[in-house]
Image (cartoon, rainbow, N blue to C red; front, top):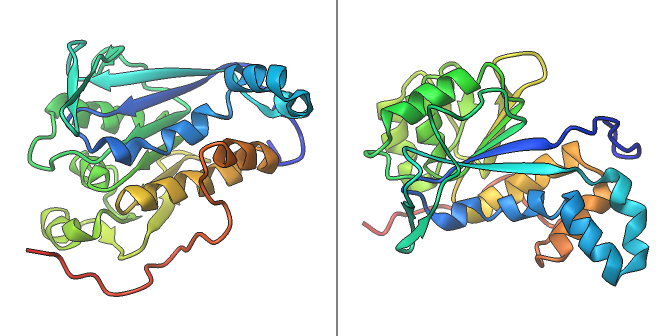
Length: 234
């Protein structure tokens, strides 16, 4: 797909979201992707007829919310969300997987197996904050460049020495088959900017601008590098 030509693939994008015991703001970028769906542009076109010109670039989307069970899963701040799938019954060949930042000491083993298997079939895996450590626990970041919340960089280097951990707002590396990619970012704001960058590489630019504009997210002025030193308050 190019930025100027509608995607001829009419199959819905299947987007898996790992959010068990995560910081909910780490998944804020999910709304950017959702705002580029045909469902949203059908709605917008009824209110703003000029939006109809972008509808050919929008995509049908199916969201799969994944946890250890289908019982409500905890996320910050004391919010319980009912999953649609478990790690065991989620398809492995998704288009996108989004991973929020969990407590690194409470990563379910079933999720590790899921990520390991899905990494060989899923086109794009995007992790925010300590979600990078979640990915690393499955081994799929071994030999790759990645980042995580700056507070966790040193613990991540000690726990997962086979990963090349970088002090950057977001990092992209090749996935485990031709054309696949793995994106990791620092904290929640970094994750939003990472998703915007991912969207600009994979969707029509005006579609991305509309999706971000409705959320008051800035496309311009994003920085790839951190702007100053970081001192944990501990």
